[in-house]
Image 1 (cartoon, rainbow, N blue to C red):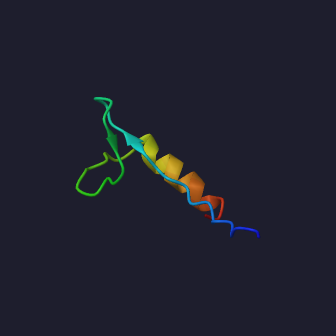
Image 2: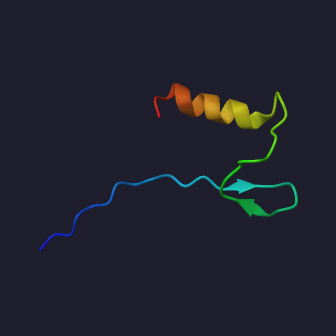
Length: 48
């Protein structure tokens, strides 16, 4: 019997300057011009 394949869901982990890991950036302010925006923009252009 075959098991159902689960759809792969990417997991984004944000590494902060102090080395801590944060799963959710809610409540954090990302300054304008930060490379984070370029990464997200590139991801969205690929059709994600």
